[in-house]
Image 1: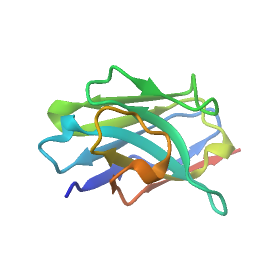
Image 2: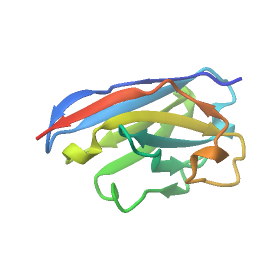
Image 3: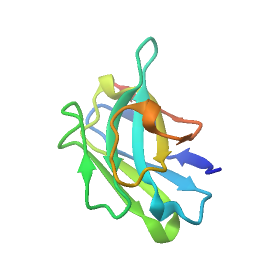
Image 4: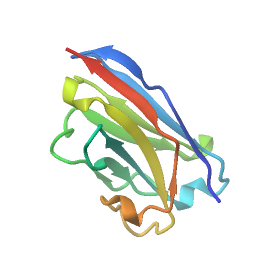
Length: 125
């Protein structure tokens, strides 16, 4: 069982930046594909970035491409989401997730096996 703990959320003005971190309890962290999702009130979960085990494959949706950067440090069992040029529509609870299938970078939440508790990101206008 992998435990994931997100941190780094908060309140920021539009145009600002935040860096989210997700620390994993699992020593075999490097065997997992990692993803970030977000969910705003009344909306479905939205994929915002995914990275394969060695960082060789990374995917973003168009809504965040060029503004968000996902990265990972396998030595620290941590995945990051650097968010720049934040907009009010980026306001949501952000979740990291782990997929045991390291051959893919899934963009849908039901393919991920483990989830963190989420961290709130609020962007004021």
